Image 1 (cartoon, helix red, strand yellow):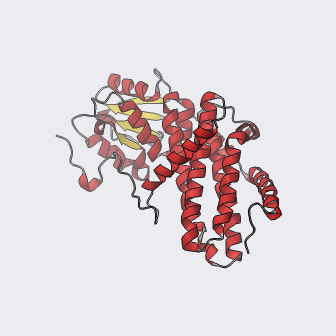
Image 2: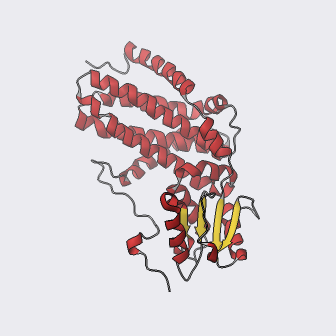
Image 3: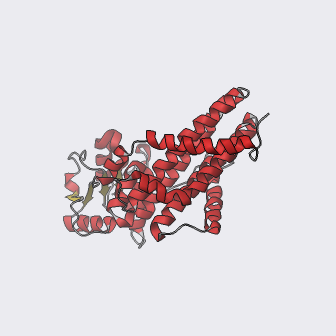
Length: 324
């Protein structure tokens, strides 16, 4: 029979969890994430004239004449964009340059954005393009947030959302071994703890990077966040252990909810700490969990009844009609 969480076995499990957490920390390498975060992103902006292109680059990055921003006129759309991380195209009369750049970029076509699709009368257009960039390119979000302060809200959201979705998907898939009596459940518990906790630790490191923290001492980052996310790690782990021994159909959904909401709450708690220099209150943490429960309804996960949210996007090849 599965042990009760309040039993001596449960207490020993908590100790084991702490040791496992330390082992996980020793196995994680932050070098790649640190290198990516500390490398200045390269943005290319194309517009009918260089003055307009520079104004767009300044508005998006929140800087003036940043060396990160390169400007071209639209007649340069045939040139290679390989050196750039983000390409923004602005032309209110035609999307031909955007199509050409996106197609020439091939597999990197996702990095090309058509700014003209955003309502020019919307005074928050720069916020919208930053959200779109970070949502589509979460691997670039950390560096964008670290180098350009206006990107921080969008970058943090993208990092948390991307990690929470990955953990939810992993929790869904990793429950498959649990159909094997006892042994399968134990395997699922171990796999979940390592992968989900590792993902959460990396998420916290990225949020620290976005907020401009020194990345040379990763242990300091984790130590100062322990009071904030520690409870989230423990709550998620214990709750997941309990659900791991529920039969497959009954146990999958709770594990997905736990993985997703625990990750979102830990991420928002870390972000709150870095913004305000203090731990969120218990009421605020409760609010983070409640918001996560609401947002998970939009994920295409069986049993939640949700659908992928409709977001603004560039039209597909078959749908594109060049603006006259």
